[in-house]
Image 1: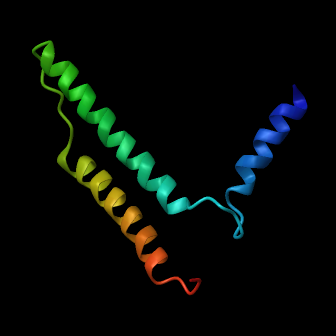
Image 2 (image 1 turned 180 degrees about the vertical axis):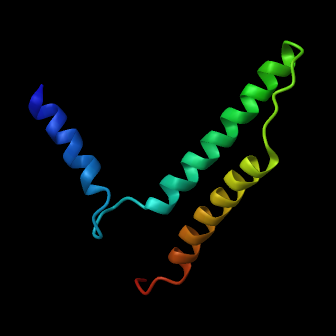
Image 3 (image 1 turned 90 degrees about the vertical axis):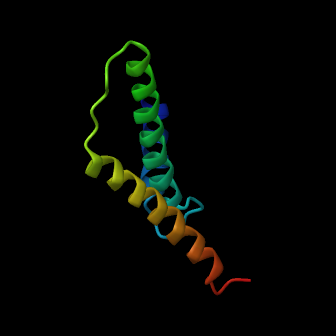
Length: 84
């Protein structure tokens, strides 16, 4: 059990190395998009029961900016990368 947890921790730690296969910007963008989807599902669910889910506009806009920025930077990195 200890070896399993150690391997999972090492895999998580490897994500933050400079020479990995994971695009961190895409991970952050996906997490932000998933949070926006959870807000939408919660809003639909509370609307179904007759209540309004009050979400501050600046919080939702922050997730939109993070999502678009993360995916935009990730794609720009692919376009302007020196490797062909």
